[in-house]
Amino acid sequence: MSSRSLGLSPALYDYLWAHNDEPQPLQALRAETRELPNAGMQISPEQGRFMGFLVECLGVRQCLEIGVFTGYSSLAVALSLPPGGRIVACDVSEEYTRVARRYWARAGVADKIDLRLAPALETLARLLADGAAGSFDFAFIDADKEAYRDYYERCLELLRPGGVMAVDNALWNGKVAEPSVTDRDTASIRALNAFAAADPRVSASLVPIGDGLLLARKL
Ligand code: CA
Image (cartoon, rainbow, N blue to C red):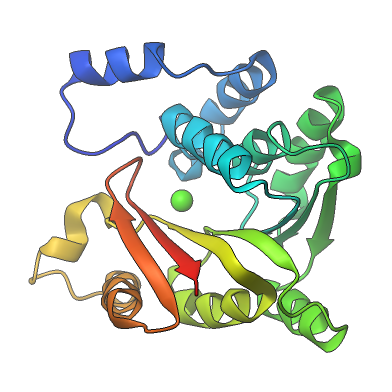
């Protein structure tokens, strides 16, 4: 089970899935991840295809990923990158990224993915210290929700003007729209959705694909 697009009937969701091509390496990774605890953290196939499509449309070469899990989103993006394209992928789990590395190698994209096993805020601070501000074309944020605003700010610095950030779980299984739900993760996601919509540094779009995707283009 992955976080399939919200609010669709089972029949319509099957139709959506059948009309979004999922390459074989992604199918295999989805099948293996399904057996793991936290399998719901994997993005849905239609979202993977959408992100690959975005990367192709935007001519992305340099990517950031905050939160790798077993590597589905990084693999979906890597398959759409041109030769020489690169993803700096941040995660703290040796165990889950071991699965990711196996599938990146099997799909022939391992040389495009630079895995940094460390807290993502440390990796982002190091990139900024090394002069990488304004050098990334695309960033995907899908890690601990309480730090979403911090990831947003660092990624905004690292993106070039015209670069796009995609923030996952922006609708959080509908909880963002239920005022009685006030836990810290939900509050953090809600706050970022509101902040981005009014942030004069970006053009934002909140999209109901998967578990909700907040897109923000740096102006
Ligand atoms: Ca997610």
